[in-house]
Image 1: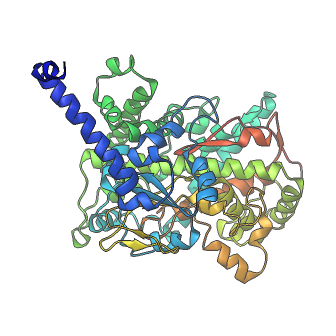
Image 2: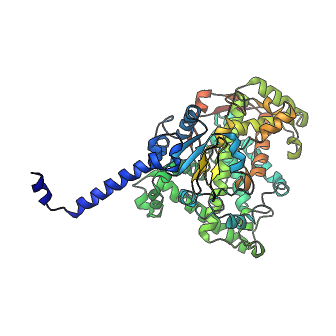
Length: 511
């Protein structure tokens, strides 16, 4: 019988199938038991591929998607400070390693195979080569300096005033405001005017749900799918009439790219006809070569990618940080009362104005904003890097070989109980105690990351937060409407996606 089986012809597909099975069986044994990373605990499924992460991140219902971040938190508490995250990735929880990984001049580089696929592949954000990254940043760093950002104060104030007028309209109509949409619209108008010289006027939308705000809100969560299944990104190259039959996310990707391309063309046309803005803009700086610093004007795709990353970073993250901070102010009468008393010292009436530099000197407002950034962690996910030649030894003594992807999550730093006692309590007091303790905590308030890759927009984001929170709290007696802490629970969809909605009635203060 056995001899007869041996005489049966072997078909090519059987050879291929057998080779496939043997290859993956050997690969699985190596990755799980023999790889240098096998010394790190974690899910064996994670050791085999990206799909363990995808399982926890890709879903539909709240609490069933964007859970990798929280799953890792639980696993770290049980299994220790370093976990196997993928075939070639280790995730670190130990805060002692954070400033080694993300320090200025760090030799840990971005992994191009990961960042290029996630969108805007030719942007400064996605650039993995440190020399080219420095060249790409050259025209942007002066633009984002505090001195230049201070010159934007009148422009930002116009948008705060516009937001206030819209709040009045909602109050007169007896309707609550959805603060996530409103604050993202405020951030969108601020950052788009900074980028193009004129805003997208998102605040004028009847429900604060203009197309640009909706596009970014919808598109960012799709990056979990694109990371797990990179081919999905190429669906954006399909004609729109085909894309409409595949996925709303694909349509949003089309809209996003067309939106940026149109705005770039409009800016260049206006500039050529002598209609350039009176203040420095992102587009202006991107279109001026700096040969002495190695910067050349990017291609149209490069300009588009740069614009998309700046507006995305300045819209969702700032809007979310403001929303979470305002919720926690309204949810704690002691915090709100103390903040209001302090604001009245520089704005005696609800219609008063105070210069940004004066707002920045208010200790309790500053503490509220720092706590808001920690608590909201609007860019919460891990930011992986590649281990440089020679490998690295972790604080616990374990070795990670060169070329391994290694990362940490801002959320895990901000919610570390050793660094921030009672981390799930919104407590501005933690920024007002002993100066040495406060300074030590500040080292780990890393909402904008640290090192060469830290957020360029930090000065703009701070100004937006100070002005939005100070003026909205001073001008309005905001009352929560059908909103509880359960509504503010979020899933990590690249940026936080909340289980509910923050709604408030926006009545003007009289004194």
